[in-house]
Amino acid sequence: MRRHLSTAALPVAAVLLTACGAGPGAVVPAAGPTSQGPLLPPAEEVRLAAYGDSITQADGDVPAGELGAGSWLSTAATDGVVFAGGWARGGATTADMLAAAEPVDADVLVVLAGTNDPGAGLSGEQTAANIRALVDRVGVAQVVVSAVPPRDAAPEVAVATNEVLADLAEQAGWVFADPMAGVREGDRFAPGMSTDGLHPTGAGAAVIGSALRSTVLEVAAR
Image (tube, rainbow, N blue to C red; front, side, top):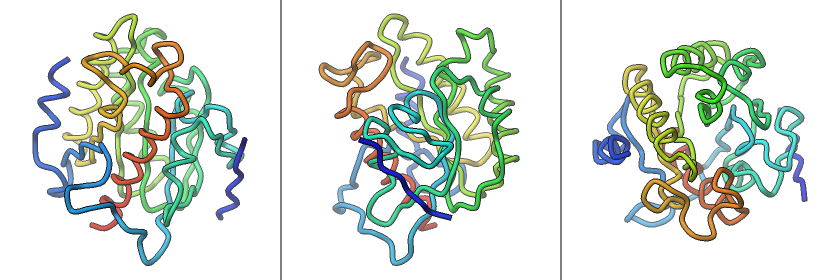
């Protein structure tokens, strides 16, 4: 069911052991509520912008503001977090996202991108450059770059992409988050967390969305 919101391998694991929430360039594990308990809804709504591919689009229509139940956004944009706009499409590369990018009035931007770049012949350098340009065009100051999900048939591809994304976030002073930790076992999807070794199940999408919601709230509270 769609919900319409009408609001105007190893290097990655090592990266995640660095400081969490210590300012620009920090790494947020994004694995859910902290040891201090669940994050409470903020006093004011946090406006979330998002750019992504099929993991974000799922069974909705993100450019139209329709969040499908199979999208992580349907879990992330709840309890004080509202979807403010963005773009997603199945199979989209970072070049596609950049071409579609427009300014969004939001507090935090989440970019979940890069999964499809290697298959389209885009290098890690091109992925990083496209995301930098996208962020500039969208114009949101607080940025979260998300790890991409596992690729069971070629796990090294996702691992290498996440290295690029983590390095980019560190260099740009953004937050790199790994919401995939809750759906991953080793370098592949955990049992029951994927439909095909590429996309999360509904339960997996909810795990990813809950983790990213926590990250968004942490970043917005700075």
